[in-house]
Image (cartoon, rainbow over all chains, first blue to last red; front, side, top):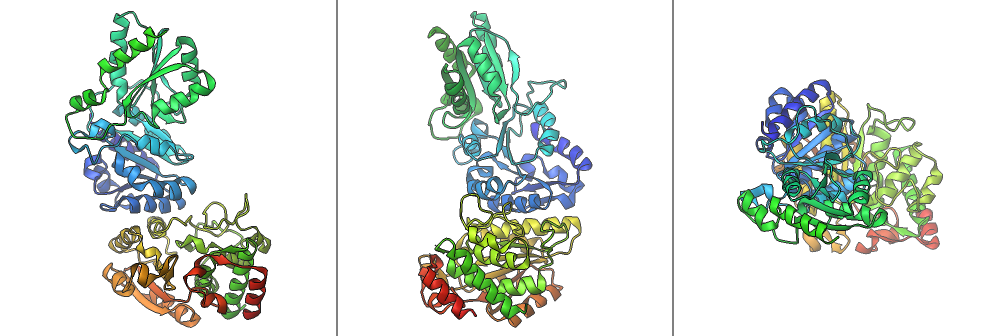
Length: 308
Length: 268
């Protein structure tokens, strides 16, 4: 099932139980999947039109009145376009607004260039008290949603709308702020977030065939980061490779190296976008161009291990 | 206290607050003192002993830099001790230069980064509707602030969603930081603009208590299902002669011991 359908389905279930959840869209309700909620909950859904700044601040008013508003747009328009609204009216005002960004990074494909963001996590992570989730699949999102609703405070959640692949099964348990340990190995730690976790899993299989054992940590909560898991694994392996669908500036690599430099200085490398402009293209072509493929993960991991 | 006396006390204590720092946003604080006096003596349904009461009217001071005028009003109404007014902008204060929803009892929304207040107020009004409350949400914007485009996103929204319990006051004191508003970036005709955006719009003398009160009553009596806008013609620095004639510099200026005493003399 598409992630957006899982998202809307679980929201509908939660909205039946919780009359404080409020849905806001900026002319992308159909694209993001929330349109299905409008008929069922007409009094708790509002489409503001193409006006993201207004959407965020209307959500602030709802939050200040006790509602739990969810605002939606493509990742760049949900974050960088409304950065000051989020900084002042959400973060500084300590409002309980959930900010949902669709199709982050390379997943924008043919809408890339203008609609593509590699800096959304950097923007949100820099703001005081804003939690940041980079979701891998529909199961993880569905399992996370009850927690997101109950969580008191601003949160940014990025996911890919139309994705149907799943990494996790129904037994998956979402633990906010905790890494998912997906593989054990002694030679290198691979820390991957969001959809890059699919590639990291494949890369670990290839590395295993080459005799390289990897600790694989899946990170959904980029902020607050599971420092303990990362430091613990880094102590064991002595090498850390981060893997993210985001700029190398301010995202997972930054978050991980900030922790390690202070607590466990470790040689690190990143599979990330290295200060390259956004562009249009097919997903596979974009991943190749930005160096975000399984092969890129394997190559960088091998080099890191060899540098021991 | 009658409204005239209340407005004087608001001005006196606004200057007390600013004098504690020696300077600040004098002009735009003094220009809204009469509106605050009318609102808080005749219209705002609020309880100083329960500032977060569910069933209350709310005020969004979108021109958040006029915080000292609101602080003076709230202190006089008993929301917090008058002594707090002497703590403006000190580290750890409950009274920051620009208003903050979490720090000050009686402040219903953070503002200061201009242009966000009307949208936030739309959210408050939408929440009232969802809860079945008929309480009012008031917004005070500056006319210079209306140069921020987000105001017009909010205005479009208020009208499209028929937020008729939303009353927007424009403090049109004709000046902004860099000069006269008409020279920097003219915003008129505000009545035509808000009317075109679907508001029921009035224009009054923002220092005439009776006119202000009547305009608010008219807005509340309307059955048009439209949001309301009351454009107030005001004087920046109103109530103190040397601030009234200072020009655009009065936006942020000094309140020295000498100026403070002279102002209090005029506001007897």
